[in-house]
Image 1 (cartoon, rainbow, N blue to C red):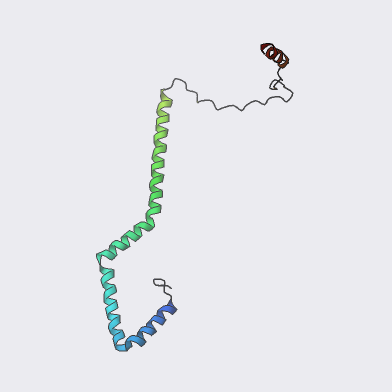
Image 2: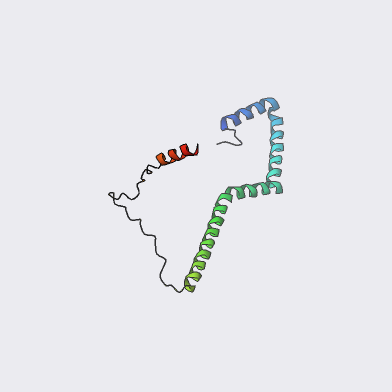
Length: 132
C-alpha cells in the first residue's frame, strides 16, 4: 500500500525519525495538529471541488465516446431519412445497378501494340539538305 508514493517501510521509518526528533510528548501534539490540518482540508469546499473535478476527468473519455456515438447515430438516421425521401420521389422503382466487372481481354489480341513510325526520316533529311 502506498500513500503519496510512500510505502509502508518508508512511513514507519519517518515515524521513528519523528519520534526521535520530537520526543513522545511533542509527537502527540504534532499528531493532533496534523490531524486537524488534514480534517480541515478534507472538509473544505476546495477539496470537494478537487474530488469532483478528478472524478469528471476520469469519466471524460467515456462521456466523449458516448456523445460521439450518439451524434454518429443521429447523422446516420438523417442520411437514411434523406435517401428515403429522394427514393420516394423518383419515378424509377428499380434500385441503381451495381457496377459490373470489367471483361477480360483475350491474350491473342494485338490491337494495343504501338507500331514504329514509317520511314519518313529519310524524306525529312533530304528536305533539310534542300533548305540549306
